[in-house]
Amino acid sequence: MTLAIMQPYFLPYIGYMQLMNAVDTFVLYDDVAFINRGWINRNKLLINGQEYLFTIPLKDASQNKRINEVHLADDPKWRSKLLKTIEQGYRKAPYYGTVMPLTEKIINFTTDSIADLIHFSLVELNQYLGLTTRLVKSSTIYSNTHLKAQERILDICRQENASRYINPIGGTELYDKPTFTQAGIELNFIKTNRVEYPQFSRTEFIPWLSILDTLMFNDVAAVRTMLGAYELV
Image 1 (tube, helix red, strand yellow):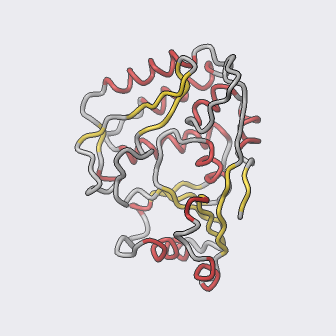
Image 2 (cartoon, helix red, strand yellow):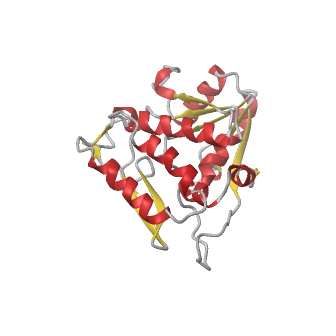
């Protein structure tokens, strides 16, 4: 069984989705410290032909809290504002008609938890793309927050009986292959290849936007092909 563990990101870029698609079980690491100005509650869209950073407002967010302890802001107007921004940017995109209802379902999901909103969004994205990856929130199952860094990752792998663990390429200095091998687990790192597609009439492609951008310009079959555009090292 192949496993990956990542902090929950809202409507993440395609590399995140590639990692999810590459494994059997994907653990949302939601009981670790929240990161201010990270990708948990922010991402990028294409608005008026330019890269646009949106942020979901949170209530008393702090790096002293775990992600699953952070709540959405009390004012619900952010949902309608974000949907209007997305409509403005993508209403002429070829797959707007099928992707916008999915987007509305995700953004209007009733919850006050950023972790629950992201979990719901990833489940919906999986279903839309026809993926079979099992999604698990780390806060609900493993009971090992006393462990840190690599030791906790290894413990989750053991609890899941994983034979392979895949991590984003940026973690090459965090994890030690011989230690994983000694535990009977193959360690790989995923390296995302650059994926490009037409974005309206732009001549210069803007990469690494939210998966929402990819979905607006491509059908499911094309996106599934893009999900395989990576290397394991």
